[in-house]
Image 1 (cartoon, rainbow, N blue to C red):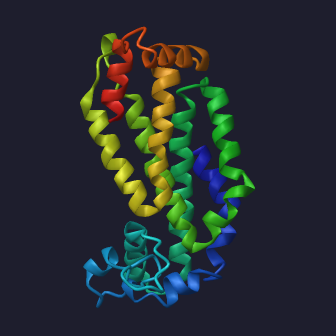
Image 2 (cartoon, helix red, strand yellow):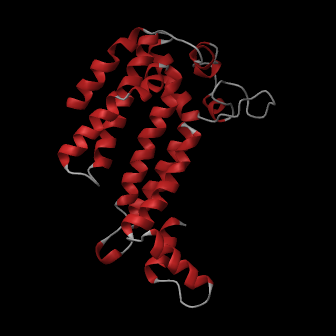
Image 3 (cartoon, rainbow, N blue to C red):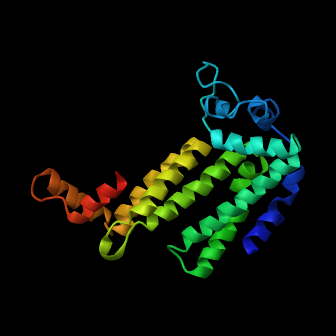
Length: 231
């Protein structure tokens, strides 16, 4: 509730911003938002409604974000307030998931402070106030959710729990279909697995890899397990 309140206090005035800059191309001029356009076109066209196969296409592929624009259009057509309202809600959700991520590494008080600072940081202004910024917001939701899911893949006695792994794969795909950068969470999971879950340090990892490459040792079981999860 506190996070929602802080986000609302920061961004309530964005509800009345209208459509600006890239919003014109992505919303006003994009026929993929219209109910008369087949849903399949969302998966054939780029973010701006241009067929991916055409040379003039921007090649930005974000069909799930465009789908949320289409839902906005279905209920309120081109009433900009509804589009901005959803963006504010999505930002609040990102901040709440960020709080859960912080709790993996910090105590409750520090995590709350970090999430509140994250909520009000001006770097997010463009993503929240510009309707096209919804791509970043949606991708961030599933990016963080994928990471949270991955952190639950370690069971008792360092066993692998496959359900969170499967959920992570699904969430990575969703994040990427919201905005391409969503796939980078795979790298974050790799870093977490190596240095947090398995407890490697850079020197130990370097020493282990060097010995394996020189044929002086076999691959440790924990590293095999790690590779199995990541692959």
